Amino acid sequence: MKIKNATVLIVDDNDGTRRLLRMLLRDLGVREVIACACVEDGLKALHGSTIDLIFTDWEMIGETGMELVDSVRRADHERISRIPIIMMTAYGEEWRVKAARDAGITDFMLKPFSPVQIEAKLRTALLNVREFVDTDGYRGPDRRRGQRAYDGPDRRAANGDDTTATQRQLADACGTLDRLRDDFERFLGEAATMIAAELRTASSHPSEARACCERIFQLAHNLKGQGSTFGYPLVTEIADELCRFLRARTAPDARDLALVAGYASALDTVSRNRVTGDGGQIGQRIIDRLRGFAAA
Image (cartoon, rainbow, N blue to C red):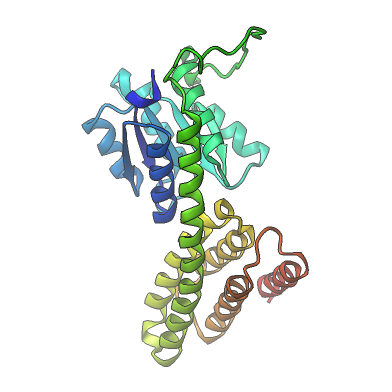
């Protein structure tokens, strides 16, 4: 199938990631992109539209990407059960890759992702369709990836082949990524300010502490999903730790709020100093502080 004829479904509960991936897919020439924030809505979209490919995040609040894969592969409708699925995650441990493969995904895409990487995943999933295996123990594309070598010239560009993205489309997608990076940096600063405001409200009105922490969790969740993609892996790490901390606190007390303030301070430091990459000495101090919070 040609990329320009494809309809792609995105299932990801992170607002920023959905927006980013939707725009990059359109830049790369995908005809239609449908974006859903949860597995339930994604499954509804599968039955309401003819979907050619699914991008899904692994970790989502509520049902996960792995549960979506299971529902798709177990679907009674053959067209739906055979749709190619690309699993997205910021965590590339070997056990995750194996678990996703055994669940029936078509490919695995690590965050941060680039337009070139997305285009390659599109091309592989839509054009190099692997045989579908349906047995008692496994349902999905053949897990073997044997490919025959080709030593001849690549005539796709010369022949005007539109099964892949053009250099202009790739350049447009890279430009979109740069523009959205600026948006993310602004959001990072705003999020640090909003978290500080929520903490003040929680401290002065203890009865509202849980609701404030739920809003802080959502802010951290959105930051976690975007940080690495835009060159801020420290933001992803800090926000991930903050989400884990808040998830375990059903009734946050004053001590919990003080620890959340430490995470918020770390995010503010990254924002004000534009700490990209591993952050060098500043990054190490932030990580050391986080480890101190975790051990407290």
